[in-house]
Amino acid sequence: MMDLVEISDRMEITALITDYSTAVDTRDFDRLRELFTPEAVIDYSAVGGAVGTTEQVVPWLRENLALFSDYQHLNGNHSITLDGDTASATTMCFNPMVVAGGEKQQMLLVGVWYHDTFARIDDTWRFTGRREQKSFMHAV
Image (cartoon, rainbow, N blue to C red; front, top):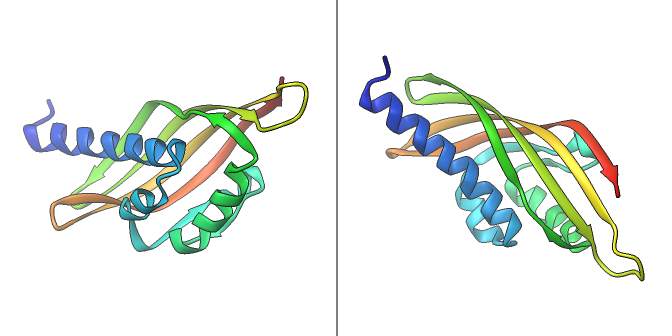
C-alpha cells in the first residue's frame, strides 16, 4: 500500500509532466526552463530534434514550433519509479500538430514515449533529463 509521501510524490511528478506539456503548448519557454535543473539534458533526436540543456534546446523549439499553428500534448500511462529524492518515469504522449500556412490544412499525428529522470530539490521535483522515443509520426 502506498503511503502519503509516495502518493504525493507520484502526484507531483505527474503534475510536473503536465506542466511541461502546458509550457510547450502555450510556448511559455520561461516556464519550461523552470521545470528542469540547469544541467538537465533534453533529447529530441528520435524525432529529428535537438539534444542539450534547456538553454540549448529552447531556440530549436521556438524555431520548429513556429512551423505549426496549433498543437496539443495528451499524456497518459505514467509509469513512475521512486527512489528517495530521485525518480524516473515513462509516459505515453499523443501530440497532434497542425501545419501552419498553405492552402490545404495538414496535420501531423505524433506518438512518443517520454523517458524522464527527476530529482527533488528544495522540496520541489524537477526534470534532470527527458528523452523522446518515437512511436509513430503520420501526416493526414
